[in-house]
Length: 337
Image (tube, rainbow, N blue to C red; front, side, top):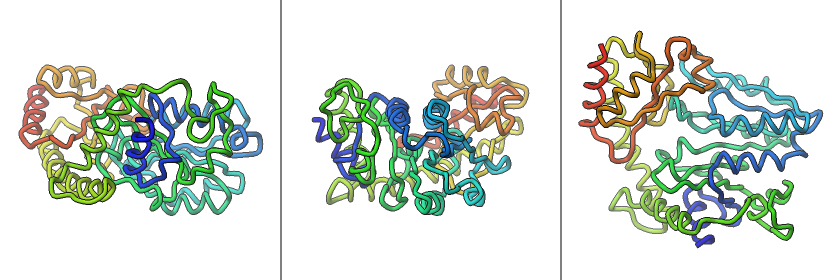
């Protein structure tokens, strides 16, 4: 079952099963990777993190830099669009850059990050790129070879799978350049970066959940990767239509303030409600059978000032979302004022 889970995750990101590290959560795996990064986070080196990322891909690198002595630089967000401007990478990346940790899409604003130009700059100076695909994976086809990221991370729970995280190395041999964090002194390959044993029932769920993604379009045929390609593109087309309807519907509510306006995005957004705290909005939505999140500890919302006006509410679509559910959301919000 362990091999089957590695193969399924490899198909999901177009990677090599030999480079798939599995664990309880992508935050745990990224923390293990950061702990093993002493040769890249030491004195004289630089680590770059982004304001757009979830804390899971920020805190581990801040801790590693503090522990080993590296300088930390921040990629900042455009306060109007909520995107990471590409022009800043040339000034951020230097000969001392050893690692850049960045998200491919924001799980708060939905903004998609342009990765290709950045990865080339990092590789030109001998650095590594770690990309968190956790927010994007439920909505977009991931291709580690196309973006040329060195390491990518995903969370199965994001697309409805079990609480299992995965970290994939584009080149499996790269794993051997990181210190082992395993409690097994004889661990080799992915096991060097895996702590403790595996829950094989959950790994079976990972395989089943990726098969679910591959079957979203009933007409999809071929290998699992080929079926994923067809199904994810079909799902994206459907969700884009629902998301457009959601955006138009929210803009019809005068007290709703949409945060950011990224040009390219996944079907996730955050909004504030005039004079109503985010916690109260979330409770009203919950009372009406709608799950939303009040992002109280988001760095990007801090930068954009949302937390200064009562916080923001984050909502996103699932593959089974409908326009009727959007209407239900709008009615619940309209009842607030």
